Image (cartoon, rainbow, N blue to C red; front, side, top):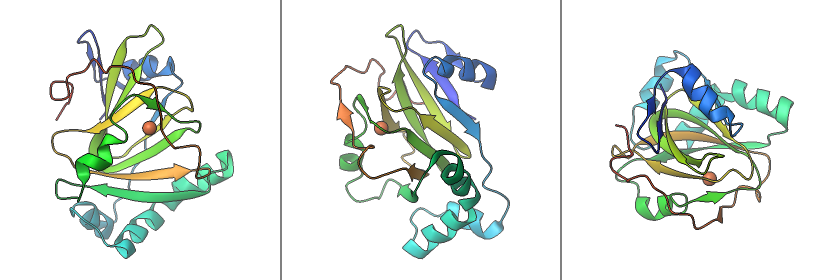
Length: 186
Ligand SMILES: [Fe+2]
């Protein structure tokens, strides 16, 4: 389950508290099950996946994609698989671990592992949200945020897109006040 840590050290683990805090930024966080197909669970437990394996997982979850297509005009989805042996992992992550926004919503569904989204709240304080497996997050367009992995450096995440241009990061140069190690919840 997700964990929200505020800059002042407050840590929330209850869904109601987290939802209330995130609502200040209109961020949605939902529980989405990956189902109980043992073959899919076996694939989710692997470090790396072939393209056909990724497609098999994506198709098993396409009920969610279909809903996003029908309700919000989403057009494509892909599956990102990261683990400690992923080539150029730090380089890949460096695109997203500083403060930025996109002109489209950032819509992500973590299906294995975990990742940390950081935000700047309306009072200019900062918060970091650890999103875990079977959690869906929608970060609205133009919301300043950042993303990094926990020390386990393992995540499988489905990304949903309405187009190809709007998710390019626009960097804002703000300092992130969270310590990269202490801010992580393993
Ligand atoms: Fe982003």
